[in-house]
Image 1 (tube, one colour):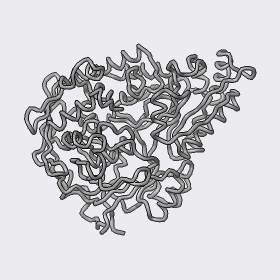
Image 2 (cartoon, rainbow, N blue to C red; image 1 turned 180 degrees about the vertical axis):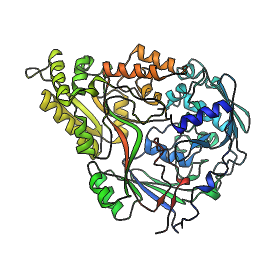
Image 3 (cartoon, rainbow, N blue to C red; image 1 turned 90 degrees about the horizontal axis):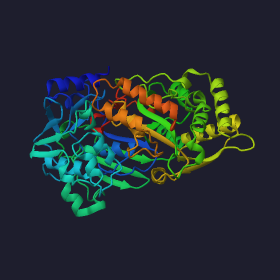
Image 4 (cartoon, rainbow, N blue to C red; image 1 turned 135 degrees about the horizontal axis):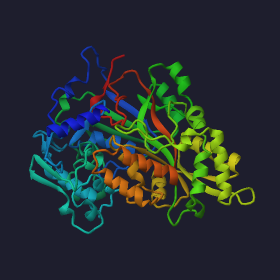
Length: 541
């Protein structure tokens, strides 16, 4: 069992989370000499979706939002819960009412106090059908009282299970106990929002000249598709113990260009280009690093009415999944320590061991033979070849994987695949509107529990882009929210996924970075990779 879950259980048993006063001030070791320039610069692949906590839907955007805004709870370098705006929380006997006590020195960047009403407003806003947040479903997933009815428009947002008892007391009522509820409060959707600023500026409120935030940093510059800059928020309650003065995110679409700029000293962190880790690890020991991440990489079939008729046949879906030689992808194309995936849930997830699968136990030759037989049974062959479009977002690594998979299907099964790549935001919209046939998908856990992955295939999930619908799976996931032993339920969900194959799991992620040796305290032990600039520091060289 992970330290995170043990910690969570101890919190619930003791009913309160106490302030770790030493945490913030001890992240720089006494023997470290700090660099004069405390600027951290890193590369991102695409322009982020948003810096609005209730709107952001991508990893790179969430990284920025975690610096600009602070929620009830944060995570330490190993993923353990630590205080954020809340100093502690209490929970009632049946674990359905959480009462968070907020620190009295938390402020917005304009100097105004952060209050419980800022959380009430933000959580109601996330659930409000009028905003139509991409993460609206997360509010229901948290088991907040009346969330489902509010999202459907059947009840007003004022009936969501949140209340400000007073300025420093935020009360949350759940529809049923949820063991991992505290972990979910580290997610950006739950961060507070400045009501007056949003009402004054509308959708323009996140521009640098308008934004007001409560995190360790403020947004000082944003040039779309080029750069985003955040600098220290002098109003932040723990500003005295923050070391990094400025964090710069540079949009560099080409990972090889990013590597060149890293080696030239322009970046402190970038991703290792696909296939280059073995070489770079030898040439730059300690700088080229790889570690487990709580993310999966998959392709999703469009099973909605707009999807191809061929994909309605499970034999076709299984044939395509079987014919993918994952070892070639992980060892030859990526070569960064990524494990092959035969289940949707990564092995790195806490408290759950993904079950073995029939496909995972087969040799690739056996998989290929089975794939040919299944596709022939479904009526496809040389005289009637299967053909479809494959969609992925622009990236050299994604392209290499898409090309490799299409070649595997062509050579082994005679399948004709047309490749189509799109810029990130267009890709998200296209996939979300079911305007695709087979599309790349990837998910990094919003919290460290198997449901963060499995819930994506619930028929009601906002990110079930393939519109897979299985009543048994939905029921199992609902039951798991109330269960003390979720393992058999999640195991059965994985069995359904393996039998129905609504997605093709390809691999599970590793964090494969070039990380400058003068960057201190990067959280390699946090599989969620929820990092905060305020916990980093630059070492004098």
